[in-house]
Length: 91
Image 1 (cartoon, rainbow, N blue to C red):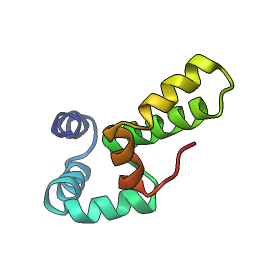
Image 2: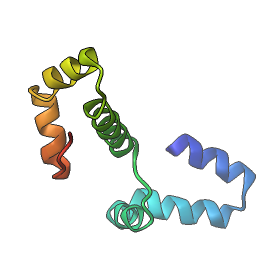
Image 3: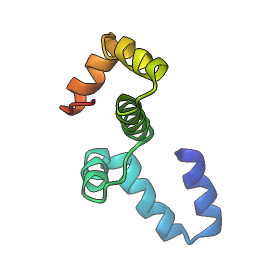
C-alpha cells in the first residue's frame, strides 16, 4: 500500500498525498469503516467471498464428481471456519 501511495505522490499534488497518508496510516479504523460503507473490501474478504461463491455454485451442480468434491470439502475445518466467520449457509 505504501508503494502505491508513493507512486501517487509523484503523480498528484502533495496535499492529496498527505490526505491519503492520513487516512491509511493514522486512522486505519476509520478507513475500515469507510470500506464497509462503500463495500470496498480488502484482499482477504474478496478472497473469502470468491471461495463462498465458488462453493455455492459447486453445491448446486448435478455432476456426481463435483458433488463428491463439495461433500468432502463441506466436512472440512476450512469450510466450517468460512461459514462461521461470515455467518452464512453454503449449499
